[in-house]
Image 1: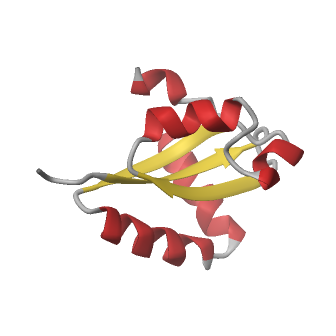
Image 2: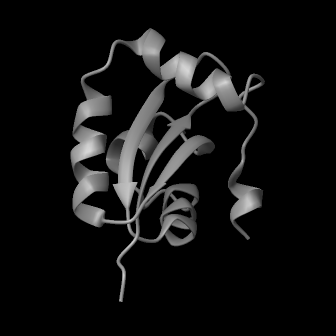
Length: 96
């Protein structure tokens, strides 16, 4: 069976604090973040808005990609988000 991985970005609001993460189950991970169990950082700064994600065929590649994205300058993250989601809407509803 193929194992899928996701790299995702959350934001507190448009132009707000960003969080980059990786998971093999994006819908479940978003529920964890919403409940304040996703990470201490996201809970502290109320970062729950899913604004961008990528799907990969391999969780190993997704982890590698996350590490790369975390090294990006902030503007590159903003550009990636705004290329597909210019208003920084919460796109979590599209996962259901």
